[in-house]
Length: 492
Image (tube, rainbow, N blue to C red; front, side, top):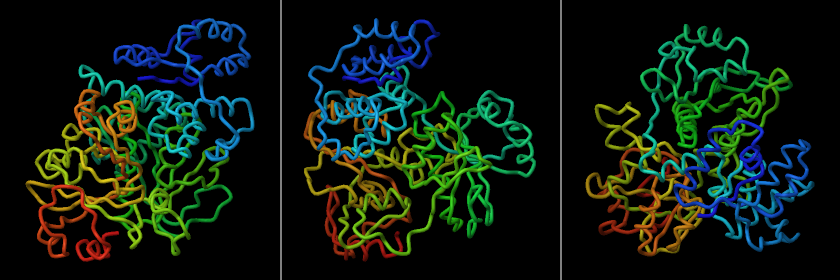
């Protein structure tokens, strides 16, 4: 496939005057190994010409010819710019927009960039699945190489005193916050807990949390009215980034807040170290609240639903902003989706057979896609009815014959092009190209959806009593009345 690399990847990759970042070397090696071609956009030369480091500028310009260039890149008209809703107030904006526009037009399959503004614009144009940060793209490349398949992960809850604060995982936190070790040992002595992933005590991802009452979270703000859940420390280690552990940690926080009736979740961020975290949080309804001690940026998420639903708000927008709440009114279509037990186990960690067994808390028992909130479902159903914002109720076939999980549709694709499907599912699954190609031997339906939650099983007999008759062997649309009778008004 064709991979477009942004200038912020290109310059450090080709600056021979500096040590090459191992991650960049790995990207180049594995891209070649997987048969991907690295591309640049012709207008990126302008970006490099503006580099004030003359030596670096000349070195990088001299090395551009080794890359393939997008042939006849599509121009971006003022009308298209307005439709995208993108800002263009500088030459940097213009180049960024041209790269994204080329992706939107299908000139390449992926765009690799660490620029948070490009990721924001990608979400506006609904091509965010094809825009990867470097660490995300490396995780995707590794998932396509059998010999380097990443291990599966889950989340465990542990006391802080179970981990040695001096281990390398915490180095970046020590560098960013004076007195981190003293703070950590202090809260560990209070028997504070964290959601985490670890391997024999070596931490790979962690979220240290704390319940508070009426805290003042920003310098110029008033105390919050009610209980809050503060995510004090949130970090995913470099070795496991791009494998959805951030989503799983956030899901753990949301679940805890809902179960304990906590109306607010918030966290502090600081500098480039937290750009990925900020992007992740904004995707689930966190908003900038202000500054703390004139240093940290504070982001907060309201866990309760609005008293009045904003008029004309699309159901998908509502689900994104108020996650894990969603709209299930009459005008929102509902579908029952049959899914085999092995795929059900793979997608839904909390209702899997592993979650009910002796090794329920063993992270090695769960696949990477089990960690995600954003998931992908691939099938050969011939329906064309499913639209963004629709509700999906997953019916586990063969053994349990029940519905236990609900999700909201984000995007769909129907076809047989591997160059379309693989980029769409790249952030959500670890399917190899060979597996995807096997699916695509027939017309295939890809449903990208946002997992909301699981609930007590609704049995096949209860489904039948609501008027949904016969075996559920294919995707089936149900009426609002059937939804209410079968799943009840208390589901949301």
